[in-house]
Length: 280
Ligand SMILES: C[S@@+](CC[C@H](N)C(=O)[O-])C[C@H]1O[C@@H](n2cnc3c(N)ncnc32)[C@H](O)[C@@H]1O
Image (tube, rainbow, N blue to C red; front, side, top):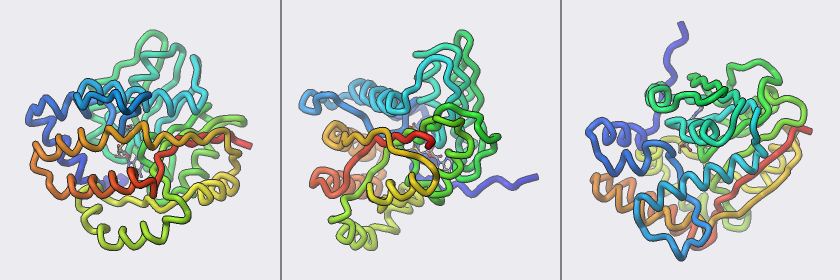
């Protein structure tokens, strides 16, 4: 029997504990999607949890649209969290074959309870590592990675695995925090100071991969780029809201780390990008 992988995601430990304890706000904010929000007009963000929930759904749909997903697609969502993206696709489209993959069985247990296939869709939630996909070659039309690639042990291995399981002409869409090349040395320096605090709160994170690195990754793995969308300003209302939730649950160190990330984004040192690629 294969041993369970070591899952080091302290923020999910905390979130699962809050959900178990019946924290209604944590459940409302993160019970479906566990990622940043997208506001069309950030000036109109009202700071409410309901507004945040709508914004997380908007971000998820934007990534799916970048992958050009339509009815009848076979979609693999890597790092699927509680299955929010699979749930959204299940609600919006028919004749879908939807697979959510996650390294963390605890999240999959919640996804299996919360997300049931509708109409003629099929859904499977599978435990595994996004860098060693347990699927046959050419089995999907679209592979997604919604705000999770920075946790994966290797972006190159993930790109190569996504390429392998996609059919010819298949699409890969993801969103990620991408530093500007010019600010990378400064960010690397800041990271040296913050590294252990980041690991204690968010687990292993690599946010030092630039858009030039992404170009190389795509070419090496056999993809050509379709689109790059910079949505940094549309995501900024996420920060005050999630910091407030963190303050309420006494997760001070996570709040400080998140505030660091907020300033990096507000100063434009790192960008929030939606990236999409096609199998060459
Ligand atoms: C910020 S959460 C995003 C969750 C989900 N995509 C969403 O948008 O709601 C990051 C996710 O990546 C998953 N993850 C981390 N490392 C992974 C790996 N090597 N393979 C698969 N999933 C992984 C985590 O368990 C977590 O569900």
